[in-house]
Length: 373
Image (tube, helix red, strand yellow):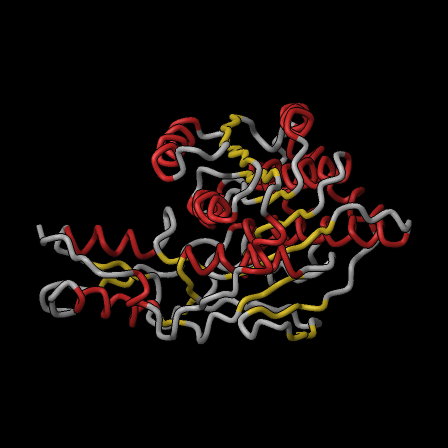
């Protein structure tokens, strides 16, 4: 067993770190009630830690995972002992449970980070991807309108662009719902909530991501397992991702999809070599590399934009707006209703077929669902 290596995640980025101007965010969050769904996850917990610095009135940390939420609560008691931070155990797929939270706190700002994000796990569980990622988002977004929340930010993923897997497609359908809802409210001249979407790539060091896996494999003496020699991914640190989410939430007018400049895609093999060397070891001598083949739903590279999207700049060179046309609200709602109906009955093939109908660019990669393309 190797000694544990100590380095900063920033060392793994092939670019300068993104640093933001915080004045804009302060104006939005100071003295506000902020609700964060999926608060106990990698992204959600970092959003909690960053929001606390902007002196909100209170923070509501919502998650369905009790132990991680309790541990985060303990951490916040040390980090900000005088702050008003409340924990709520609830599942976003239960509209009644989430309604109780909105009724109790009446939040001003909502960061919706609750989601299933693991590609291979969702490839095996399309029903859960729909129940949490789609229905859950629809529940939270609908309640944001009902309770007149000022800003709702959905945290999405580059895997929603031309998706090759269930997880990405479920997030794209959730995005479509948010875009359609915002568009409907604009047409009705009934905009009380700014609905925004933020889309970014892989987050270094997040739960279940490649860096912790490689760290463990290096500690165990190898081999490092990589699915394909040519596989690439966009990367940013958790801190960067959450800073950008907060700034996008503060600058947005409503209806935008914000994408972040994460530099060039990183080859996973290069990341592996770098981590082995940072551990003071020699690749392919001390630590072997083993190729295992692409997994279900896994693409060789990710994209940040759909083929039809146009990119608009913002005052921050690291944040761009992807200009995408919203679809008809009643069409999207009808599709989601149909999908939920199939999901409730655990009709997997029917659920996935409806996903593909709603997202025509969803072409399954290396997956059993290819037959439905």
